[in-house]
View 1 (cartoon, rainbow, N blue to C red):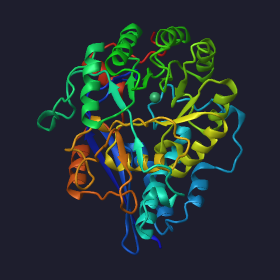
View 2: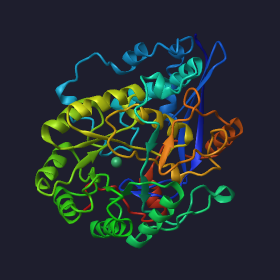
View 3: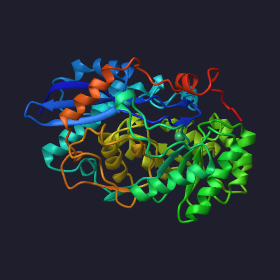
View 4: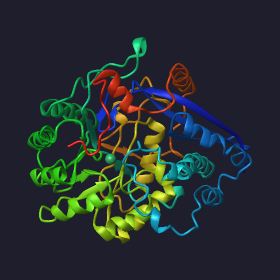
Length: 437
Ligand SMILES: [Mg+2]
C-alpha cells in the first residue's frame, strides 16, 4: 500500500471571545485538515494546528509522504524528531512554552508535523484492517473517554463576524456568578463530571470566588481544576493554593499557576501540607521534562496532547512513563473540531494511566463549523464513546470542509495573536505580562 495523494486544507472555525493570560481569542480559530489517499482508494484524515507555519511544515514533507507506505511510520518519526539522540541536559526544562501559545514551540515542530501524518495514517490502517484506531495501536483500556467542562471567562459574543456571527450561547462571563451559570449550561448539555476553569484573567480573588462558587453549586462529586497559564507569581500561587486547598483536592488540581519548573517546584514545596497537586502543559512539554518534574516534584500531573507530543503512540509511551515515575496524566486541548476530538478520544482510550478527564474546547465550536459527516460528535455523561467503525470512526463532509476553506480565504490573519485581539477590543495598552499578579 502506498500514499498516492496528499492534500492540505486550511480552514477557519468560528470562536468566541474567550479570555486567558494570552489575551482574547480572535473571531476565528485556524486549523489544518490533512487528507491522505492510498493507491487502493482508502482516505485517511487528521486535524492539526492552522495557519501558515504548520501548513508550510507539512507541505515541506510532500516528497516523503507521496509514495510512503502508511504502515511504516517509525522511519518518518526518526527523520522528523531525531528520536534516537540522547536528550541533552540543556533541553531538560528548556522547552517551556510559557511565552508561546500551544503548538508554536519551534523545538517541537517535528513532533507536531509527525503527529498530523501519523493520525491520518492510523485512520488509513484502521480502515484497511477494519479496526478502530485505538485497537490498531495495541487496544483500548476503556470504551468511552471522559472529558471535563472547560469553562472560560469571556466577553459577550459567540464568534464569527458579520453575517457569519454565531449565537452567543453563554453570554458574558466575567464574574463568579456568571461562571456558575456557564458551568450549569455546559453540564446540562454534555453531562461532564469534572470542571476546569481557565483562569489568569481576573484578579486572583475573583477567581478564588469563582472556584468556591462552583464547589458550592456542584459539590464534591465534581472535581475542580484551575489553569491561570502562568499568570501568578510563586507567592500568589501559594496564596491561592492555600485558599482553595479543599476545593482543589479530591480529584482536582492547580495547573501551571506560575512560570518555569523551578517556580512550580517552589509552589509545590510550600503547598506540601495542603496536598494541592500541580499539573502542567506549559513547563512540561517533552519526555525529559517529565523526569525533571519528578526529580523536583514540580509537577504531579502531566497534560498530554497527541497534537504536539508526537501522535497517539507517543501518548501511550507518555502514559507508561508517567506511570513509572508516579505521575498522573490528563489531556490538554486547543480549539478543535470533531476530527481532532476523535483522535484525542482514541488516544485516551488506549492510555492505561490516564487518571483525569481530558480537556476539550469542543463546546466552544458549533455545528456550522463541524466538518465530520452527520454533524457534531455526541457526548454521553461527559464522555465520548469509541464508535463501532474502522479508523477514527468519522468521515468528512466535503461541503462543510469547503465552507471552512472559504472562511479561511476571507481572513486577514494567518497566525493566532490573542494579545492583538485584546488590544483591539478591551484595552489598547494591554500586554501579556507574566506573572501579572
Ligand atoms: Mg494549560
